[in-house]
Image 1 (spheres, rainbow, N blue to C red):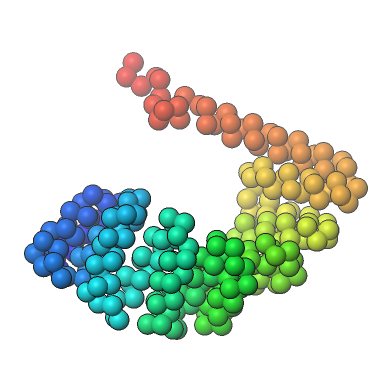
Image 2: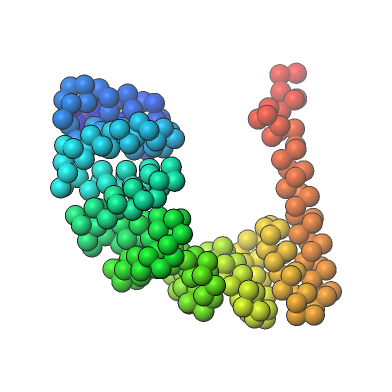
Length: 258
């Protein structure tokens, strides 16, 4: 029974979702009250995109171990979030927090569900609690900064982006996020600086050149804006050409088999 779930877990991590589900089902057939079997099968159903089956298994897991099985609430809450059922997801994450109040992840994912529901204040409160527990948890800063940006609160969002950059200075995307915040605040000098850093880390991303082109234009640096716009067009055209190359059309190279 445990051997089946262990093998199922290993198969799932390697991408063999059908094999993982089959192994977990065998374990459940041997012992219908085996908690790990339902958790492993639910996780793989979720990865497969079969959220209804995942929820059925997680409901059973929670029935088996309602107080200690916080994995059931975690997984079910995440499945419900992906399905857009934010209210029920928030309830499950709340139960997870009751069982494990020191989990930064629990607060962060509940904050994300609150943000998706449109409750930015609750999202900020949850993310702040996650950061209090784990000050280096980038995911919590992402949730909180996004909620601040949605509210038009650029200063605290920029502060969060700055913390994210300090934690991971090689993350090009975060420089772009902070550049966007500076641009919306009309601080185009700092926006250009952040976009330039993003380009250093991710030089083939056309959207960054478009963003920097806009910031340059607002500064009155029209030649630099035109150069960035030209570069964005070139990179976009290159991406389109790459997607149309023979090797990528339908995943088949027409020259094969000759």
